[in-house]
Length: 264
Image 1 (spheres, rainbow, N blue to C red):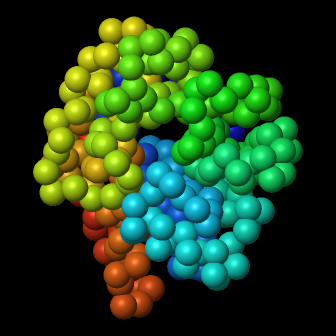
Image 2 (cartoon, one colour):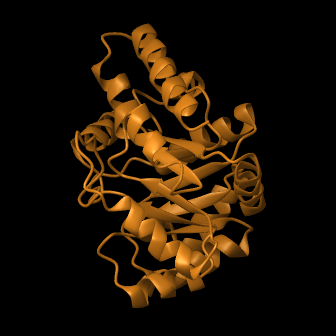
C-alpha cells in the first residue's frame, strides 16, 4: 500500500459525511504470537495505527507504556513489530500507519526504516517525538518510498508552527485533542474545537484527532471537527485487563464496535 490509500480513505469519508475510525494497538501485545488475533478482533476500523513498542515512550501514558513493556518482554522487536503490521495490512486490506519514536528509526537509519515499512505494506509513519524542525530527513526517506508522513499539532502549537506543519504536506495532521500524554480522560479539556478551527483555517489537509478519546461519546464529539479519530488506551486496556485471551478479544470487539458506530 502507499500514502495514496490513506488519501483515498479520507476522500471517501468526506464524501460519506462521516469520520474515520483509526484504532491504535501495540504490536506484540500480549505477545507476538497472539498479536495478530488482537488486531483481528478490532471491529469497524477504517485504518489501523500499529505501535512499535519502545522502552522510553515519552508521549504515552501508563496504559500504553505497560503494553509496550509487555510486548518488549515477550520478544517484540522492530522487525517483529513491522511483520505484525504487515500482517494487519494484508489480512484486512486497510491502510496501516506505523507509530514509533525517533530513536527507533535512527538506530537503523531513516532510509532503511522507511524501506522496511514500505516492504510490509504500510501507508504512513507517525513519529511521536519528532518536532517539525527535525522532521526533514525522516519525512524525505518516508516519502521517497511512497509512504505518508504524519505531523502533530497540539493546542499549545503557535500559529507560525501550525502554518509550517500544514505547509510540509503531511498525509494527515494528528491533532492532539488533550494536553499531556496518551490516556483516557473523564472530562474534556475543550481544546479540540479550537484546534480544528486553526488547522482548517490554513489548509484542507485531513485532520485526525487523538489523545484522550476513549468512549463512544467522546468519539462522537469529534465528528464535526475531524476527518478521523484515533482511540488507543481504551482498546489497549481491554487487552491488559482481561483475565484470558478469549475475554480480551470479546471485550475488544465490543468496545471497538461501539466506537466505530458512534462515528457513523
